[in-house]
Image (cartoon, rainbow, N blue to C red; front, side, top):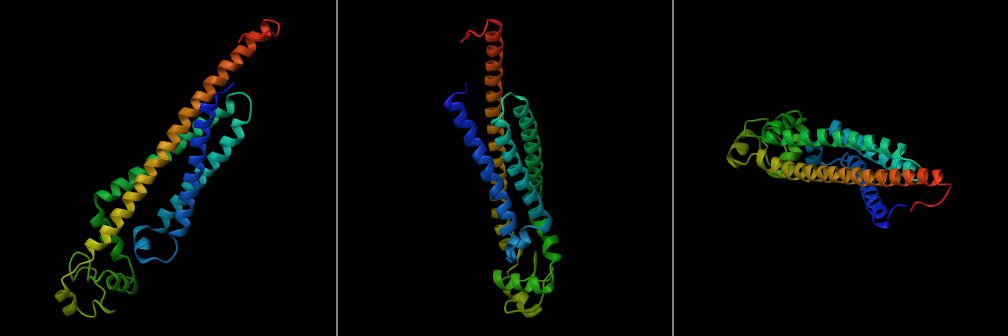
Length: 218
């Protein structure tokens, strides 16, 4: 039989896996709401990837419940292969975020440049800045902060610093969360391996008992 500690560890990591899936899916939905800086930080594709990750983790959680109640080890072995796939997906997403942050200022220069003038004006008014790298770079005139080039030049406050300050903090938090997801998946994988080993031992002893005429070997 499985020890209570082993069952508790397996259940702990499994519940954490469910929580990770719910968190990923929820944030991917919530962050689609109108928000100037969040909408600048994450593209629709980024949030779709987050939703897919959440669905994958939740599907793995459901699978884990189905296989743990079954006898034998085949289902648990399948679960471990699924967990390995999860870890690869998480690794790819985490690596993409890390690489993106290495050139964050230039990357968000391109993102800022793709925004409409109306959105740029709203961002400039919110952050009290004009242009991206300088007052003539991707600037949009209008609003209260940057009504014209003269005011933009005199202000001498550019959007690259406040934008990347927000995006860097947000992406670092997301990256740390993704690292946490990896720890959960690895933890459940190891706990699952222990469950498989214990079940294999139990099945071996059952076979020995049957050969001994049903007398308990242990």
